[in-house]
Amino acid sequence: MAHERHEVQEAVDRYVELRNKIDQGDLTSFAVLADLYTDDAVYIDAAWGRLEGRPAIDNWLEESMVGLLDWRFPIEFTAIEGDHVIVKWTQILPVKRPDGSDYTQSAYSHLIYAGGGKFSYEEDTYNMLHVIEDITTSGWQPTEPMNVPPPDPNRNWAP
Image (cartoon, rainbow, N blue to C red; front, side, top):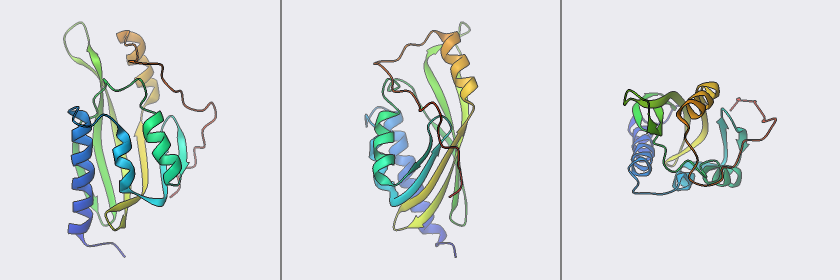
């Protein structure tokens, strides 16, 4: 049975607030999002694969963003259906195309609300080929040596 809409909305608002603060440079690490996940949460990333449990998610939120602190990830909208939340967001590289437009990639996250202000599941979906093409074409360089995803990530996306 789904939680009350206002409870889910409050958790989504907190998630969006933290993401906006990161995007604006008010917070310098995605690790601040860790408190929004249950201890047994599952997080699926398109490049890094399946992460299970808060310790793995906490570490990944920090390690996966090394070298990307100059990127932006604005949220375009959210949608709620019961305990399911869709977040539409964009990745924006910190360099411009020759015509002055941004290098951007479209992305979506599916979160499942678990109660108590926390999510038990998040799946991030984006086109990694598009990301690599934009990095290559733009000539962007990381702000520091990046951590790379595992060579054979677990692609099990089941909650």
